[in-house]
Every structure is written in structure tokens, then in C-alpha cells.
Image 1 (cartoon, rainbow, N blue to C red):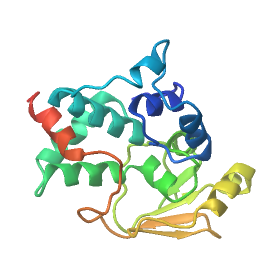
Image 2: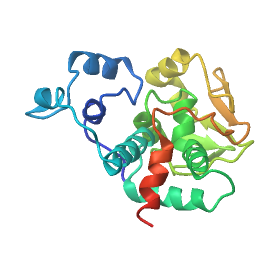
Image 3: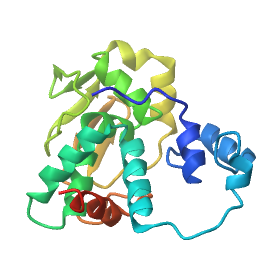
Length: 208
């Protein structure tokens, strides 16, 4: 499924939230604190209660944007999460978090989820010493992710790796070796995203 190629700040302005934590997007949201479009400034001052469906739709679209996946992919993840033991919302986040492109991003090998996806698609990422170009690959606990030899000398990758100071507790990262290992499946509540995932579950529940 294709990646999102549109303006990255535009969806974040529409939601009024910083969904991709980069200084560039933070500055844009600070300077243009209103929705995009010709009547964006007017919309910024309109008030009114959103319908339940509208709120559910917003949360679903935010989650899709954060993980850089399309509607069909997100729906398939929901269907799989709904068949697993435990809360569907937690299961959904665990599946999304274990995507290869997301773990490349969380390990700091890519500055954004879009940069991480590009590294994977272009064949610059190895999993257990085997080159993988499938962003949606579900990384298993114990598997090692590594940046290819050539890209380790890339100035952007070196800068991104150097900037990251904290990682999720379920990932071990060796900056010197440009490697990351998924220690375990994230526990309930460990995946932190600015989304009410229960509303996403409710959105799909009403469609099934």
C-alpha cells in the first residue's frame, strides 16, 4: 500500500495537534494555529459539539497518519487485533508498533516515519542479517534490525541516530553498531500515541 506523500504539516494543522514530533512541524503549528484552507482562520474560532462518529473518524485518521498507513491496512490490523486475546485497542497498537518501518523510526534510524519507510523500501534495512524491503513486516521479539553498511555513513542517518536520547522500553539500541533489537511485545499502555484508540475501535465496530 502506498505511503502518504502529501504535505506533512497540513493534516496536523487540521487536527490542531503535533502528531509528528519534529521542530519544523512544531514551528508551523505555532505560527499557523488554524486549520488549512481558504477559510481556515474562520474555522479556528467556530465552536460546537462534534458527533460521536466525527470524533471516531478523527481518531482513526490520526492513527493512520502517525503510522503512515492507508485505510485498508488499518482496517485489516483492526480485524486481526479483534481476533486476538485481550483488549482490541491495545492489540491494535501492539501490531502497529511492531511494523518494521515504525521500529526503524523509533530506533532513530529515520527522523520521521516517512524517512524510515524510505530506508526500508530502498533496501537499506536488514533484519537478522537479511535485507528486507517490506515496511509492514511484523518484527518478532528477539529479532535484530540493522542499518546497511553504506547508509551508516550517510550524514542524515548519523545525525538522526545521534539526536535520539530515549527509546521505548521494549527496544534495545546500539548506536555504534546502528542496530536495534525488539526485546518483547509492548505491554498494555506502553505504546504512547496522541490518539484515543478506543474511539478507533468504536469506529470499526459500527461498520462490522
